[in-house]
Length: 191
Ligand code: NI
Image (cartoon, rainbow, N blue to C red):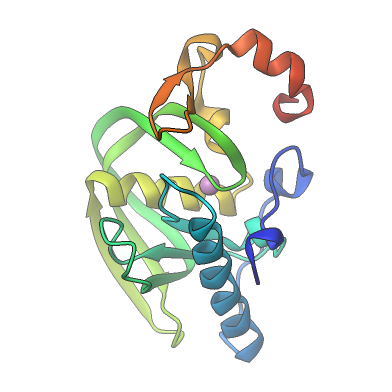
């Protein structure tokens, strides 16, 4: 898969719930490899952004699969963690709002409240269950991706829309978005 396999809003699949994976077989492993390739290909096309993570729905597969980069500080590290049927088993530490983007919402960033810490249960690519405690950026990423498996996109969490969105400039800086102008030109995105 390539970046061209990544779907974006207003594609209605992004608002649908994904199915559980019953068996981690070769077809599932092929989708996982495709997701990694699409994420890295997207990153190669973006000057100032890192391809942090992807959910299978974003490559048009309604399956509960998420891949997350091992090291988001080092673009040369192309390893991923795989989460199949991921579930949040505990949310802790209160809500923190911070900037978030999404490969399926091009160029737009928003401040999204997320729990500071989460505990996750999932299967790995060998079909074995594992548990993980995450905080900070990883906790945010996992909440964002598990939302995707439930048909939720980050903009759905933003209440005060006119004041909460930012766009990435050509220099890689975030600047407040002229929201009224933006929705006039991108109406379908927000419906
Ligand atoms: Ni996303």
